[in-house]
Each structure stands twice: as C-alpha cells, then as structure tokens.
Length: 220
Image (tube, rainbow, N blue to C red; front, side):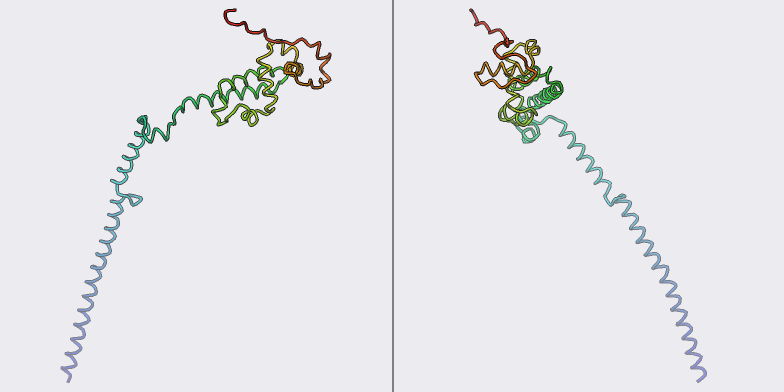
C-alpha cells in the first residue's frame, strides 16, 4: 500500500514537471509568433509608404500629372474638342473689345466728375463705343441697351451727347456750355425748346450755333 502511494506521488510530480515544461516551451513560441506579426506589419507599412500607398503608385501619379500639364501647355489642334471648348472662335478679338470697352467706360467716369468741361469728350467716347460696337463684347444687342444699363446719366442724355459731339465744334461747344448746346440741338431737331435754366441768359434766337462746317461733296 505504501509503495502504491509513493508511485502515485512520483507520477504526479513528473506530470507537473512535464506540464510546466510544456508551458515554458509554449511561451517562447507564442512570443515569437507575435514578434513575427509585428515585423510583417512594419514591413508592409514600409512597402506601402507613409500614407498606405505603394511607392510605385506615387511615381505613377506624378508621371501622369506631368504628362497632363504638358498636354495642357501645348496648343490644341484646330477643330479638336479641346480647342472648341477652351478657345472659342474669335476669343482674342472679344478680349480686346472687352479691354477697350473697360478703358472707355473708365474715361467716361473720370470725365463725369467735371461734367461742365467733360461733356463734349464724353460724347466723343460714346460715339467711339457706338461706331466700334464695343458694347457687343458685354453681350448687349444694341447701343441703347448698353447706355441704359452701363451709363449712369441715362440713354437720352447719352444720345444727345453723341449727337452734340458730331454736330458742334469742341471749342465753341465748351464756350457755350452744355445747356446751350442741348437747346441748340432741340432747335435743330424742331423740338419745343425747353425752358432755359436761370444761368442761361438771352433768348434762344440770339444764340449763335457753334456748328461744324458742312462737308464738301467729293469732286465738287
């Protein structure tokens, strides 16, 4: 009986040693596997780069971007879709008209500050806009529509200033002033003369008209 008890106790001790040795042997293996997983993850990050993209993908994107910039810098072939979309027909002429119209309207705003001395030049600038049809650059179908929307002193006054610059001489018009020139225009057109302003002395009949000399007929 004593021998059987000793045998059992010795078997228990050997089983404990075996289990402890197995546990100690498994721990390094599991730790090794964890380290291998970490190394694989780090290696994949190194392969994919900082943002998760492979280095070849970044080089590929940079190459395509450079090619696209080079294509955009080249002039589009005539008749191609890119030429039709990006460069409409007559684009340069439209740009030139827009720039010229901007310059002319800037002149008008400057002359408008001293209307008593700049009215004749305003008429000249407006006449130039009409003759060159610069108003079409901003999409206006007529000169009158342009005057209504873009010129702050209105269509009727603007048209009279255009006519004034074509009918009268500059020096004489400036000497007589804008009001008298407007009255003279009304008399020439057969319109009822408006009441003269208090600053306009003398009757209308005694007003000498500063008209431009008539053009001689060719060959006359």
